[in-house]
Length: 489
Ligand code: URP
Ligand code: ZN
Ligand code: ZN
Image 1 (spheres, rainbow, N blue to C red):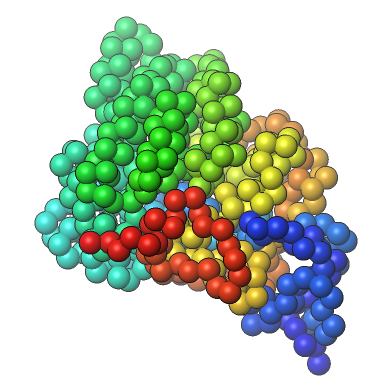
Image 2: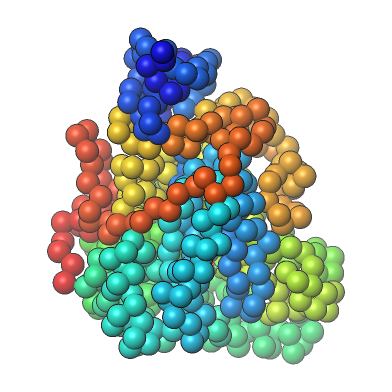
């Protein structure tokens, strides 16, 4: 009888702290041996042939089966979204359960569970989107939901149907501090964007490329500064999501240097795309429209610098899958102005290949940083570490075997989402996850899926201060020690 369920032989096993050579053994869905030679046999044996075994990715910012504030439904449901994630080496996602105004948050969470449970093939938690922080939501629903494992929520400083006032943001931050939750902020100045968009469209500049003009750099810089000031006032932790802009990044860096508990995220679109990509005939550029928009080469360089120096803790996809049709990106067909376009680009499958190829292969970040940015720090930030985000004895056996030399030309036809295009069509990447394992189950192998619908499990997230390293000396997530050490209210 086999001693283990799965044994992977001859791998280069990478964690955020280092690299070890050897075998991996899995039993009952968790790692039971990591590194060295595993003597017993596995019911399933895989020869990694010296390739890398990396922790399964944790994507803590993606929109799946979610209705946008403009009422547009995502093209990916919890099946296609999680299949696509898995093919890209991601084994955990944390999408959003999105409240629209007037809705009960508890009801929203129930609806997302009903959608995800029968379909997801990898494990998932939920953030909340809070667009209506009523007394009932703040006083009852949120505290109870935080206790039930929904420990992070996104708020918006822009979008008519989602934006909170500074006063409301302070209410949410104070509650997050008191209850041990993390507030994620979409930081763009609403009135600056609205004013610019109004005047641009009025003068006939409604094409997609003007989206990047309306979503001005200073709108991101100002809102980031203001968000941090609000967090500072009530001494609450905050994550600024999908950052793209030089001055805003510098503001985060300075806040962190002052000891504020400010965390930050960026995404593939800000290292791979620029505003020039939006400049296409007709409304085609809509396929590259996201908020904040991609900027220029100097901003890309600043984003890489912030990935390298630890200003950014997480690299997420912000997968926002809208098809290029009237039910999706362009509600008025070729008459759609940038103001009416659905915002967001797909990227859940390419997130890790992009970071690996553009980051590790080009010497911009190390393998350890890749692991931290793609998996470990996400797990830490949402209280899932060490169950998720690492390869260590006792952790869930979520990992991918990577062929670092595989050359891939990106074609949407080879991806597994339901979007119909990719903004990275034709790009060359080097390095690909060839075998993907979730809780010991080989779910992707030789380009084929081997996972049942609904086999993913819900993960209740914890407050980050409950995430403690087990046994080994793990360096603190930059700034996390302050987060952990300081009692919340
Ligand atoms: O343009 C974007 N990022 N759309 C997705 C929704 C969001 O704001 O994250
Ligand atoms: Zn956002
Ligand atoms: Zn998003």
